[in-house]
Image 1 (cartoon, rainbow, N blue to C red):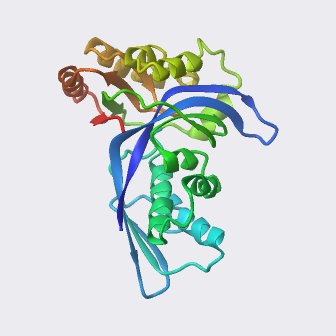
Image 2 (image 1 turned 90 degrees about the horizontal axis):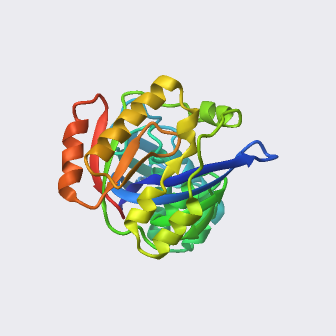
Length: 283
């Protein structure tokens, strides 16, 4: 079976505080885009779980989230693991704030469920996914959703009106644990208007959503990294983006466009910067 694992963006991302369990309470609007990895699952006769990717530096053992997802699936079903080959063709940038690994894990859960005749509901799959990672439940459901708690409390939202998305991941990566450790001591410049963005989604107002996008983790970036993200956002806005923000803990910055021509102009301008640049659409 072959399935697609869609990247996610954070249209808003707010950190509400630290929890007693050491995690943080989050409130954010998540959105799927058609930039995707391709996952192929094939049963094998040797009884082993094998993972292969097109990127040599990614783990090919149980440290890979796709592998972990399959193990949690069999555990939930109460059956021993079977022989399975998982092949991942990566297109989503790694360590980019777009849940590439979590999306792969979610795609494996959906695929195994289909191979078993849709034995479990999406909500049940999301519960299994929470054992693998905080973003996996959202990636199981996809689309447009409000995520709260650790990111695992999900409320489906009206879909974001169809638009073009231009993304640029700079040539560096960001440590997610380091940003979470820092966010509690950072003075935040502002917070996203998540409730206003939800109301704009309910009204089908793309411009209203774009105006309210913000990610508090931008304030926790080291100065030289924040400057680079801001450079990308400025290019996007100058080319006609309705709004621009950073996704997750970064460093990928993106802009929403209602004009394909403006989106392609931004794509070309961003190619002059170091990093990976993509033109995508919402799903």
